[in-house]
Image (tube, rainbow, N blue to C red; front, top):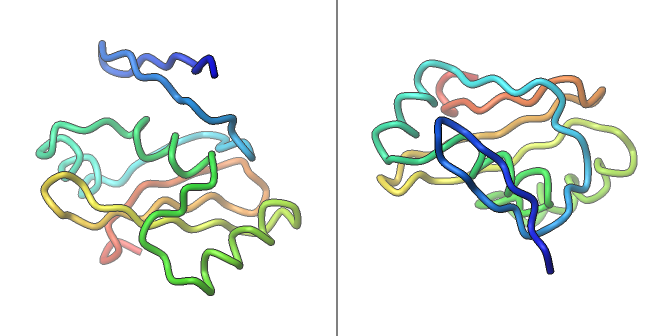
Amino acid sequence: MAGRLFNYGGKTMIMEKKARFKAGQVCATPGALEAMNNAGQSPVEFIGRHVTGDWGEVCAEDQQANEEAVDANLRLLSAYRTKKQVKLWVITEADRNLTTILLPEEY
C-alpha cells in the first residue's frame, strides 16, 4: 500500500492508512506541544493515528462511540501516550473544522 507523505518541522512522515474523516484545522495546547517536543515526536504522528481510526488508549465504549461518530458527524476522542509516557488527548469537533491535541488536565 502506498503511503501519503507529510512534512512537519523538516521531518517527513508516511501515513499508511487512509484517513476516515477530515481533521480540519489542527492546534495543540502549550502543554501538549511541550510533551511532544520532550519526547521527540510530531503532532502529525498523533493526528495520523487519530484520523485513520486508531483511537489509542480509550475504553471499548469510547471506541464504539468513535466508530459511530465517524458516520454520524459527532465529536471524536483518541488517547495516546508519548514515548515518555505523557498522556495526550486528540479531539475532533463534530463539524470537523477543528482537531485539538491536549493534555487531559488541560481539558
